[in-house]
Length: 59
Image (cartoon, rainbow, N blue to C red; front, side, top):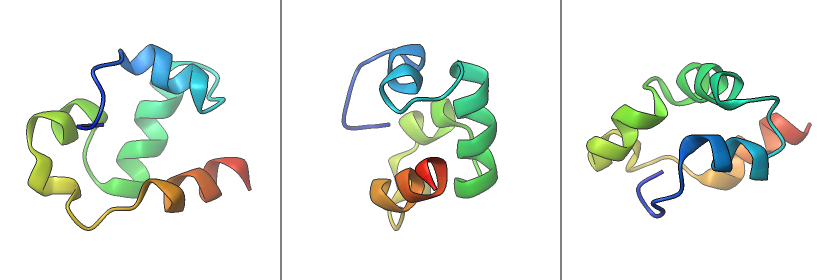
């Protein structure tokens, strides 16, 4: 989330989520904070890997 300025709605679409709220729910469940909180506080996702999240969403 902190490596792009794309709106969360565009990120959700690119990752094949139904909508932004679906991305937000899944992100918060997996990471522990909302995407917007992760953007504002980079340290919250320091050990998190994007590919781990993609594996969960894509099965």
